[in-house]
Length: 578
Image (cartoon, rainbow, N blue to C red; front, side):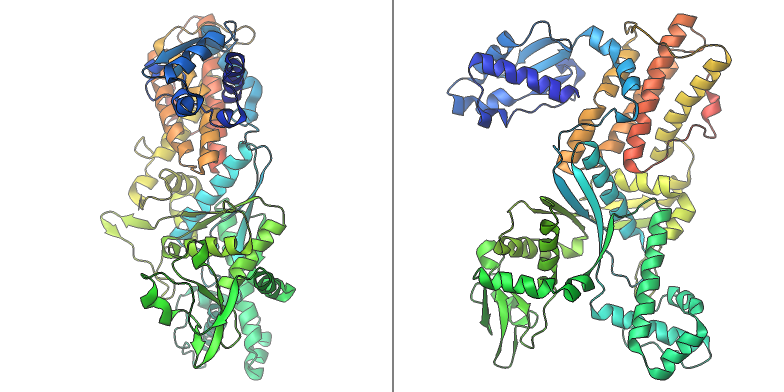
């Protein structure tokens, strides 16, 4: 990996210059300049440590240049710019060797050990098991799966998890709604319970129920049977839809497991032992801004009976929170604490949760609660996945799970395919609102970014096939120098892929990958149009076929990280030069 090799060389130069300390080296990082004229890599490290080192940034930069190995096989020039930036340029020989290096690495190109094997658990989607997945869940699924993918590619040990909230009243209501739907199926009064789920998917589930067992459950008024049937069948439905979308989880963790195992009670005792709980009708810790909300805090009191409060205000929340109601029932916060305690007990050093914007206010509450429990301040990172607006032309499709008015994940995959859906969801940062343009998603043209990148991959495959038909195969052996400006630009772009993956993983920003693939495809198309392959002299043709093959490999690797296929043929790919 170029980043690690460059870092090792600069660290050695700092050591030789007498500037290396563990604290300073921890701040040593590199970026790829936006402007290619600034070189292939750059760092502002000298400015970051100058004050602490008692030297000017320029003096530190000059010292690094002086001690940087002149015969470094990768870097041919190190330049000081401005007040103390360092810019690094590849040797021409290294750039020329990159296509062969990429092809030798194959599917491993872009991977690194940067994460040093640290265990991370990524929880995402975690939709209530009360209806099929909608497009909001579809976006979270695409983003979460991509985060897991880039983390593993960059050397972390990342696991995926879906948290099933199966211990609440919503599942009871779902069971009662299924019961009503079955009554309607057999010609009885099928009036839904108050607040029941109205979606037609319940009629579908009711039609699948074994009639004899369902009638027996009606006769015995067995609410638990209806609840279990609704829950298991709905979870299975969600799993099927996600699997068709290409998203699977290492574990589906049920909240009921926490209660049955005693983990919720054990967590309450652990909090008591740490001295961070107390009994009271009102909270002791509360900010002035939160005072008006105290009376509405769930389960705070029942007459004069006290509730159990957790000292989250001391850890940054705007007020203490109830974890056990006055009537003895735990609030939703206590099992959430128990769940994250379980994550840490399973050996995960960090946890990433993907939540919708409606949970934004809960982020500080939960992180404060985990600090009160004694978990590391940086254990939990919550990322907000913003809403999606599904657009049909200029009109937005309205969604409501309870009323059954929503575009499901299955419908979306049926309309545009999983490849296109996932690419579209990953284009923007998850913090940004997204308008999903159905019309653009259905286009098979350059206006569709998923098709644009897949077409670039298919074009490389087409060139390889047509070259083979003419007895031309990609160059092997020693690397020929890169000559055309378009060729140099393309190969330099290919060289940055490992850094894109590392950066996406470190920042938990998978949208960097499709952004890169779009830029790479643009460079590839420019190279294709300005540097003919099959019409060139045989030696030149073989050389350019190797460059195209390296580009194909990187496109394939990048699409794989997104969970998007890399087709070898598309409708337009046979337009490749005859």
